[in-house]
Length: 522
Image (cartoon, rainbow, N blue to C red; front, top):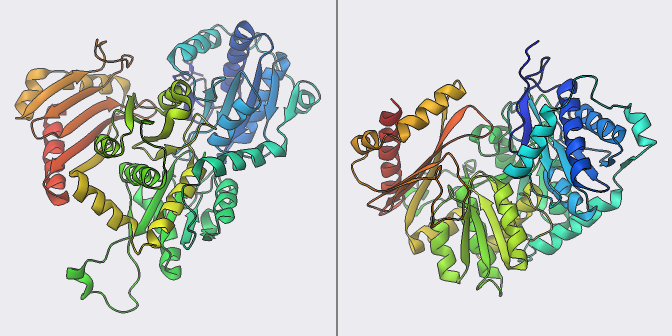
């Protein structure tokens, strides 16, 4: 058995399930929970933790294991009696005034993975300083003698209890209050929870709105093997394949998908039939659906919220530095302030704590959205409602979301945003790529029109952002490229924002910038 343990990072643990210290398993969860208990007992007078889990294999077992260790250490513990998504856990931390929260999930990773995500007393994911303090306690755990553990049944007889059903009802009410920007409900929806935890909240929320909702039967109920979508990520076109078939049969207006822990949401909408191609379509031809990018959905939602609200001026929208710069143009038109954070919704959650009621909307290009202050993490269930309400609002005006998006680009200018992942085999290789990206001469040889270079690794007087392993390149035509290593997967991520006179020109510019980046990394 390897001696090197699975690393506890800024969001907790995440790895492939299996035996060994470097895998997700019961002994690793016990060790992490003992370290977390030690940290909480040092930090709080009467610490408490609430635990949820998603549909992944072993999620329930890992959650019960964590609860058993915490209870054995006399930490008051609450655990959900059924799988519950990330946003419900975030809400529960605040509602129950807990010191911390745990979600057993690997988000949208492939079926082999699971994880142990830790939340602070704010309801947001732990930030770097707290993560480092918890990691120090975990590393100090004497395995196995230093781990306190009791059986889960005994924990339930002690300081561990099941979360009352009323909390979920209160969560639904909080979502209702935060997301009701319009009332139209004439919309046919095909929904897939991708065998994850979104089924119950999304069906409840969309059902209460009066939409015509059909749930994909093959992907409706929990299944940690994800048999029809091995990589259950709503950013990916392939996860919608089965849903598209049902959408075409039903002539649905929209397809909605949430990932296993239901913090991300994606949408496919009917493609616009242009006048110049309408003659080529035959009667009865199946509808064609187009996947909205996370940036496209974020822009549509932000514009919709601003259009349908009377009190947006002077308030603040928060987004990550890698999300589309088009947001700034729309915000300026509505008199809304823009705050940018590092990648990770935990930083947006931190901004919500600072902004309070001034916060109007937060989004990441990776399909994460939130309105309201009831939670401190992105909410796929509430996002599903927002997208459907928005689609119904425009449908009542005779518009599709693709037509509305085209109108946004016509009004504010064309920016094509793309996120490209480069698979990297090891941490050493990732570091080598970032060294290449920091070679200014190599960059200037590859890109002919760089107008600005920002390395977020080093503190800057003009920025409040903490140091991060991120490089930003700006170009003379206002295009932008941002490069960073993934925090959870063996990838280098490149975020391209390409300007052009129209979308076709932007796509061409994006390909040009991507090819230049390939030359940089060799």
